[in-house]
Length: 274
Image 1 (cartoon, rainbow, N blue to C red):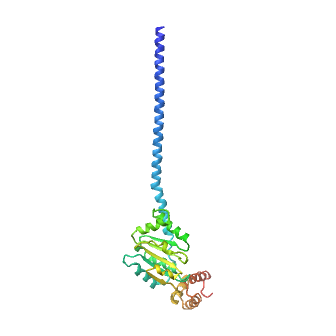
Image 2 (cartoon, rainbow, N blue to C red):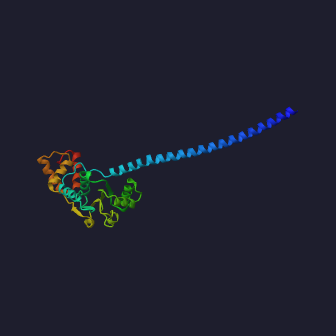
Image 3 (cartoon, helix red, strand yellow):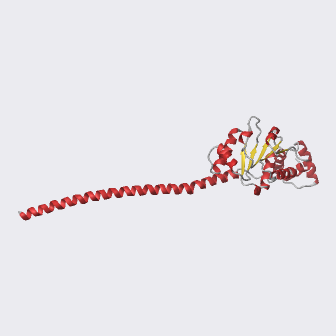
């Protein structure tokens, strides 16, 4: 009986130890679960941080690249206007500590936008950043400025872009294209600072009030117009073709856009004598 009682006591002691071990095991398991969960959360957080630093800049770079590429190169058949291009070049090279604003104004189809793009293509190394903004409506202006803000990681609003341009004391260039609506107060959208460069194309000569220099872009000289038509029509510069081209450009009032469109039509027909 003593032996059996002793054995029972031992069994009870073992049972108590087993219960304690079970409790300890459950506690350790629970702690391990918490640690694992914590470590997992840390890992997830680290992964999120990595994705933020690796992915978002790339997205912004793509957006920036898309935005900068939205400023197209001039037409390959651009011809003439060298006097205006030289005047623009001399103006923007001035180092007078002022913001340079140049206005190209004239009738629709006179080639203002192409002239601005040609100047930009010839002066890429002079400017640190180049932005084209469709200025036909207030909504388009806001969209263009928002794109600049996103591309430069300075925010998402038009005001953020203007603030970035105001603080960025480098040779950036803004092209406000098709600023034709007289109801739009363009001064609202011009960076208020003493640095930077701006080109405005418009049918409205009253915008001269904002410009340090301006040029009226009118019809082309007959010689330039004839050469442009022959080039656009992909024809040889023969005496006969020059004579026919002179008659055509006269009817088109020497307007570049009309001449280019006529040239494209002639190119399809294959002959100047249409």
